Structures are given as structure tokens and as C-alpha cells.
Length: 83
Image (cartoon, rainbow, N blue to C red):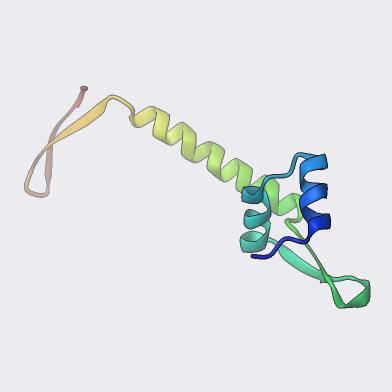
């Protein structure tokens, strides 16, 4: 990825990190801009959906913290608090 001098300066001024730019490139939608350029962004409704999904995933990870299983083949023998 090549960053123009202008974009690097604006990223620094606006506190926007390369990781955020890379996220937009991977997940954003493009709209044509004047001069043949593209505006790339994540629509707010979609972004809120992603935030909610990951918030629920974090809660699920927190709930399984300190839980273990004892298995015999394909059978869950018991569940326990551990570690």
C-alpha cells in the first residue's frame, strides 16, 4: 500500500492509524468521487452491527474463562471450573 505525503500528514493530524485504513480497505464500501477517485467507508448501520456482534463474542469469551470439560470420546463427562 502506498500512502501519499498528503495522506500521511492527514493521518497524523487526525489521529488515524494505518490499522484503521487497512480495516476500511478490507471491509469498506466504495463510492465514486469526482476525478475518478473512490471514497471508502463502512456505513454506520453496518458498523454498529459489527460492533454488536463483536461485543457479544467478547461476552461469550468472558463467560468461558475458567471453565473446563472432561471428555470421554464424544461424551461430555463433566464440566468444571478450572485453571
